Image: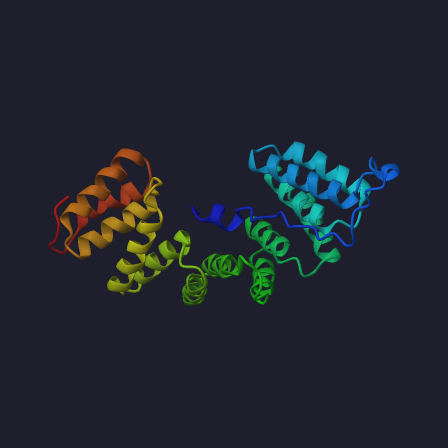
Length: 267
């Protein structure tokens, strides 16, 4: 599923560490390492390694943090992401659980844990984690948790629930391309062509600077055919043939030209 990556994506993990009191400036203490500053610095470095595709280096840094502070829920949470990137799913799950045992209110960690459960096919368990995340009304990425619930619902063949969750996600944050595309496809299948085109147009506006997926192009072709939009039809068809000639969507497009029963645009 193209949107698996979307569900799995690593959320912002860095969180500011609030320092209590003032740092002493006595000469005798000037070289003493502040444990909180040391921890945050290494967490930031680990996140940087992950963003650049070096999970092994990130793990080394995180282990240094845990040597100093075995109660760092943030270090365990980032460690879960690092192990997930390596494909070490049992280690990733253990790390996420340790983090949440230390801080059950860490919604970013819980959302990433849900993503791991989704990735490993544990959809009901993933659903429970995402639902708990949506209960945190102060979580800055709450919309993504609703979106993730939509993906879970699709995997569990509950399209009505998926539609509800994607709509909730977009009410919180309109700048979510994946949710817009999913709704466009669901509404197309339901025969609600006007609303499908509206969501697809929104998806296109959000993704102008990136290459459209084969799935998006095939959806655009179908909508262009329905609304008799010749220029768009030809544009989407040309891009699909150029970029994805071996895709399932291209085969479906070619088959639709051969077996189309109703009059419309000629491909």
